[in-house]
Length: 208
Image 1 (tube, rainbow, N blue to C red):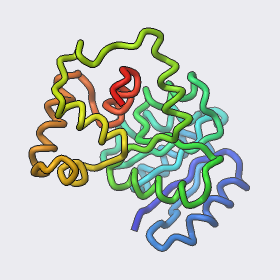
Image 2: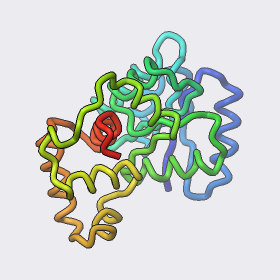
Image 3: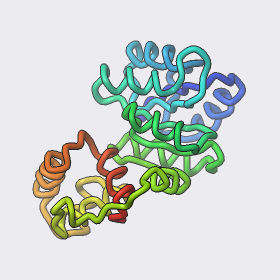
């Protein structure tokens, strides 16, 4: 069972989303929040698997809630679900540590699948966000300047495709431990913290 907290300042949207998710047997909405501070406090109390986080909320926005959750609660994933895909909002979410970023315009099945993916450790970004992240980079960099091997590039491409370690291992005919160690070394090599940052790095530098 995937336990979810919905954070959105519009009550009718929370209720509508809760109704949608209640139809999925593997997902349970355990709490609701109306801003980022409440989302963090609810997360401390209920220890959800995933927090669905709107970005623009009064008093304490989604970036505040995301940052507090990711810095202080191990294992809680934050999936941004918002109507905004402008550069400023995307940057705030990414710098706060969001595990994924999707838009409310997506259909119900896509939202449900995104929750499942993030809960399973896969970073999820909709196409709009990929394009928005690419626009941030004024001067494209060649991946060769980072001395990446072909295997490391393969890791990056598959991470951006949403593959977990087991799926990457299967696609590249490697042991799962080899993939895990390889990604750890890649994080160290690029001075990055997690798979989300790897995905952003790959997009910004035109590796995918």
